[in-house]
Amino acid sequence: MVPSPHSLGPHRARLRPPQARTRWPSATVAAIAVTIGAASCAATAPSVIAAQWTVALDSPSGSTWQPILAGGDAFAVRRAVDAGALEIVEPTLELRRIDARSGETLWTTDLPPLGTTTDLVRCGDVTLMCQGSTIRALDDASGRVLWGIEYPAPPSLIGCDDTQTYAAFSDGQLDARRLGSGVHRWTSQLDGWEIRAFVGDGRRRFGAVAVRLAGGDSTRVAYFPLDQPRALPAWQRAVSGGTDVTLTATADVVSVRLASGMGGVSIRNGEELSSEAQTRVGFDVGGGRLTDEQLSGAVVALRALSMFPLGADIAEPAWTRTVASSTPLIGAEPTTDGGLLITTATRAVLVDTDTGSERWHAALVATDDDGRACTLLGVAHGALLARCARPGSEVLVSLPTVAPRRR
Image (cartoon, rainbow, N blue to C red; front, side, top):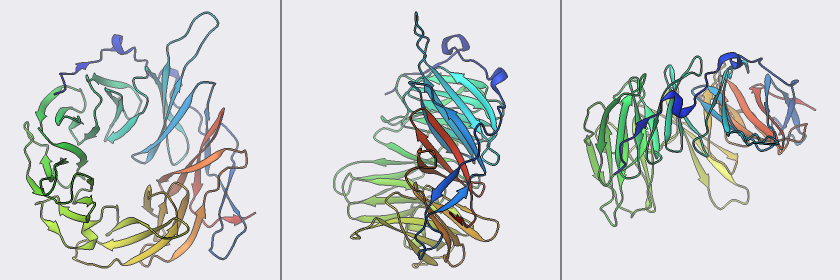
């Protein structure tokens, strides 16, 4: 069992507010052009999309950046170690929030680094940040640290609803705190259960999906509502197929993948779902769910993207499109002209939402015009966000979703 955490006071955490570093200029380098693949399958010559905006992320020697796309905005996390001639200055972590529409840096704040990776969750007016065994809550408008909690062990998962934050641990412990203050609400011990996902979309109460691993037919999946001081399962059901379980969830569906196959379970009552549309977890866009499946046996890595209508027991997708990509879906967002922009880490496809017919596709090549290696981060406000980096030089790039022009 994880021992009780303790609060991080301002002196202990040595937190520095944003002060004069808030609201930096929008773009710090000239606009660049990112080379991408052809806009149609028949064309072979590369094309160019001019960036809507770029933001330079300065990378002094010994520093690294971790860009994160969360809640429609981009966050950039930099860890730096500054060494002087006579003394070593304490390492610092720089957190920058960037408006994904304009590229404007809304705020920047320096914090002591407390872990090697950073997880961010947007919770209304609060951004929840987890590093190692420490959780901080930051004011979304200013970057000011509202409160911090250091646990004796790193949480395996963090989440939040409108009023509370949740930290889940590998031993089954679940800790709940007030979102605005960090005041402890309750702690529950889910003996034998491992929380794999938090679910909730504002229409239903917030909850956690957990799995209890055992051999044979003894592995179980359960849903725990989190609107009560003691977390008790609303339902649980046995699944057969051993202990190799991949579990993902949306607000409506738990998708369980076992060695023997994949099935779906309703969040509402735990009943097994027969509809192919409901058993797959993907991106809910409009009135449908976009799903992603790796196709095996092909010489080139292929993925099948399928759109399933929701609200009906339909076994067949409205449409399926095959794309060449070795990486899974990372984003899907409708456009204002009836299109659907779909991205993996290396490819973007713009299709018609109703028919799946392709308008154009873009395969991001290895480098941009300045020799930086580029990868797509996802979709935000109808644009593609990409990261292009090489030692000492890194930029975030916003690319418009229009058919590219030829070189």
